[in-house]
Length: 472
Image (cartoon, rainbow, N blue to C red; front, top):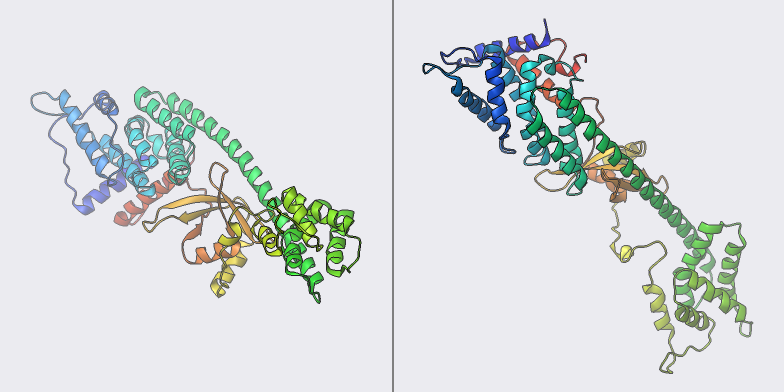
């Protein structure tokens, strides 16, 4: 039995079992031309977007019957034939389910409101719409719905304006130009897919730049951690002045990290930086300080200190007098404060003060962390944004196996979230973030499966195959 006929049989059984009354009047069956003309009139004023799912389709039935009154004779209004009524019901069920799948009041609902009448006209003329995944109208419906749901409504205000405009153009074009030619679906789908491919290429390039920056940042963090370790080892058993200690633990750690990052620990530059550390810690009175002062000043300038400050600090750590512009001596405390207030290498302004200290993970969070370590780059996550349950999608573009830092990007490839794997694990256990399980089932196929499951509750059986699994 053809799939459309099977669906009609299920509808009839449900009506009988629920005692649904046939609301058809005593008028003649409406012809195909009358129904198409009535829908063409309704197409000029699309259904309102948003609101409770089901309300717009109920209004569609009422408006369609109202349009058919124009063809009435002798007080009898043409009525939808049984096959037409079933088609209207099935398309209405499809759109009601899609409305429930997407964000209330979002772009997807708005665009669905524009598609419903043209697609109903197509389904009335071509029942293959219900069974063929590759039917042009069905493909356009799915592409518009998923693009609006995933690229616009889930973009947290970051949707590409050109994409929103393109979708507006596509749906308006269908609404105004469709008059039975299925070629329009093919043309509009190709137009939208070309635009999506362009956006995908841009997003890929943007994502690649952010990943490269994050990897560079990770290498810098590793170099700085190594530099901190080396400085700490050199300070063991020594008693430097407070200014020398501050210099070594702050700016000189950055200078050493820069040498590791750029040249490696086997380089002459690295050995010179270490020699400077040892010279500052082991200096004896009367030692020649000219070369050492030059080395300190040069290293400080490399990590961003202005020449006057670098020169003043280099002189002071070697116990040479430093005079300010007013002729007053500059204290060690003033120069130590300059070192502490400077922005550290690789840190954004205020970053050090704002870094949260994560509490240890519990057993469940630790298990989640181990699972996350095997998640492939490119996986999508949903982040809960508020107590109303609104979510936004983010793509895991990269994470560091060393530091655990994660980089998330939005659909446009722009950096959107940056957190550690440990924090991600904790938020997932709390239900604030979830991994989006990849599925081959489209939104339209899922809606069809829901419809079939609903009908099967009343009949105890379902169509074979289901609409989602029908062959193209």
